[in-house]
Length: 110
Image: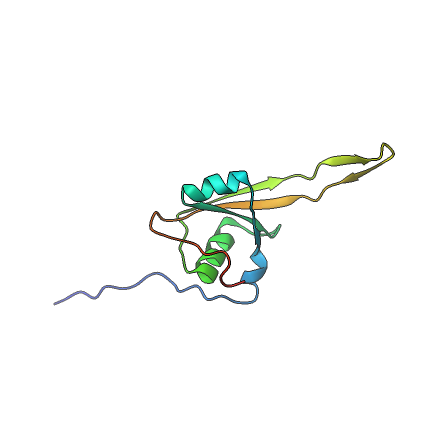
């Protein structure tokens, strides 16, 4: 009797909420170095989890990430013209590691 192989992976479908998770790709020197090693940086929603980010990247770009790291960068306090102070916004970043054979086109699916 032959055994059937069961595909346990669920297909992630891009819905309207998925596009709210990935705010924008981060373009910086650090992000350029990461892209040489098969990773990419995104600014993500404040309530996004690692699993949310992984599902969003898979649904939008069609690539399943191998690892997702999340960093919260607190907003700095700045002084304006020596008088008033204000705070820069707090940003949540996700560093997404991709498989070695994956290529990600950021200009697609915007």
